[in-house]
Image 1 (spheres, helix red, strand yellow):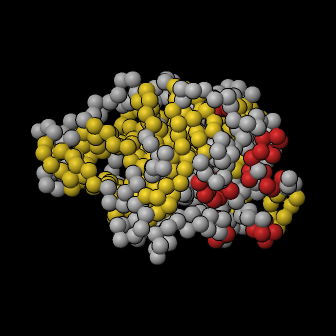
Image 2 (cartoon, rainbow, N blue to C red):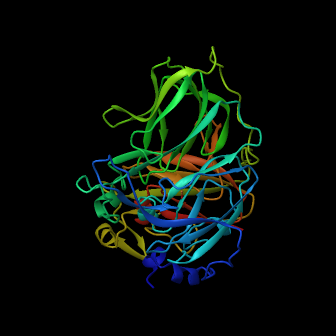
Length: 463
Ligand code: C2O
């Protein structure tokens, strides 16, 4: 096997990383999560059904909901024509259950199964998605919401889980374009869809009451699209980002930006009058506003608005890291179209940009255009880490760290909220800090999924 074929040969990778080659022993009581193809009415009814890949054939996949500290037990049954695995994004999980094919487990081959069994230590809004060939599998629909409820939840009338997805459809046939490895896409902004859905619908309409208090759990499950959002007919507060409570609720005025894989929990009060429509809107490139969800206001929940909500209860890992003896790491992101990258390492050889492009690699992290056998850093358990990230490309990148959450180190010396994914705009330099408090091999990559496949992927080991 050539080193560059690393992630596509999960069985070979399993040998390289000493992973078990077959699925784990089958335990009878697990509920199944079937990865399979399905035909769904995605586009407007003048189109035929679209063939997608979905968990249990659904888009998004079934909502998984547990209470904090409870166990998730799911058997992935792979009915797809290629190997797959499930990653539980944002969960501070046992490493063996992290679902990264080629790093924490072997890909689950067609017809095989794998039992995921883990505890969710933090309450919040999380999600799950395929983590083998994710630039294809997630774009085909393998994604769903994972909600971990607080034992003592906030005072609300109801909640709505809002899964944002986009799809790249052939406008003639209404079917997904299967150009997942198209160089133009990989070297630019990634696979940005031309058809946006909320909970699988392009015209999601719900009802609400005046002065009703709703928790919105918004998940950006798109392959590469950044969603700039705005509320209309609501007053709202941010109470959590990437699942983790932010402390004092911050009032939402103006724009909220959600990069791929990021989540935000809002508590909103319906201020729109009866007969009107309150909306969650997407701000387009041209500043045009399009509704992602419309709430038709009918009836009144209470005669007066309730005012600022209380903070959510903190999660167990909410402490700020003590950086006295912190390890300093640096991650330089380079490459892409219109970038300055001349060359990078691939399979241990230095290749020029054109040769890299021929191998389907357009990006590099610290000069390496692929997932490496050696980690970016070997960390000891509970070691504090300061990681400086420099985006030397002209594209934005959303960077999640698996298994642990970090805090951004802000210019005034304070820490931002705890989160798992940082959105790096073009040219930005930012630093994050975290405690390496979860043992295992943890991926750190770009969640513009074709960027990850084209070189933006690394990992850290905590022992
Ligand atoms: Cu949602 Cu490796 O990530």
